Length: 287
Figure 1 (cartoon, rainbow, N blue to C red):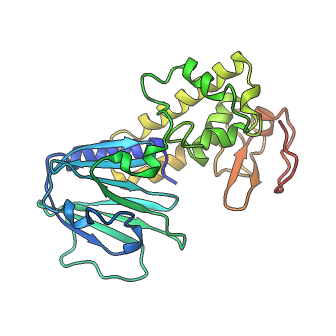
Figure 2: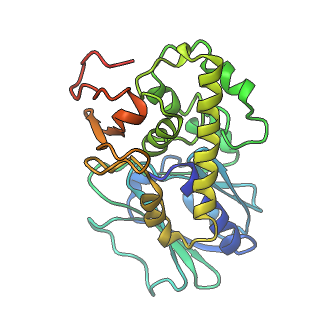
């Protein structure tokens, strides 16, 4: 799933390639991705893109018409930039293509989604806050005002475990399954430690790990073409998606805990005092 660093990189890429250019055609292929109907997606045709913003994991293309094209790539969605779009409209079918956006220059981009669980979402709105997911977002962890005191206040009464708290978009925007694993590994904390149980020293340690992990991921992705961002994300991950491999810090074997629709990875030596977490649902997890 694209998370804050990849969506920020896409935002920067699209700012360079879209700002000041006019959209001439909006070609939906999978109607299910359209989550709004008034205004219709075709209302974005003829508009000139003035800016590209990021809200958590949402992309926001602002136009001179006052409309916003908002995209959430979900788990398996992606944006594929094309220096030259194919001639003719795309053909509906069972392929990954969901929406094509054509510019007056002949360039454009495709929104695609792999797999059978179709969660890619596209909105055309007059105000980004009309998108429910954006309206519910918590603070951005890379915003200048997101200091350690604010982070501590968010966790003070949080009774969930750290893994779930970090992934909650209404608590902190933009962190998903992969970077929550990376942040907790960098902080040397169990994913199942209760957020409200952190000492001031542990809160500082987690805050520093969060800011450093996300900032470094953004910097690694800066300037990359859209098509290279997935590979960059994977290459930069230390524990997430690396079950069975040696921990790059201590050499212990990276372990996994599986859930119904996701999994987490961690290093026992670095994060849980050498003890493996129980890998079964509804188990009593280590703190």
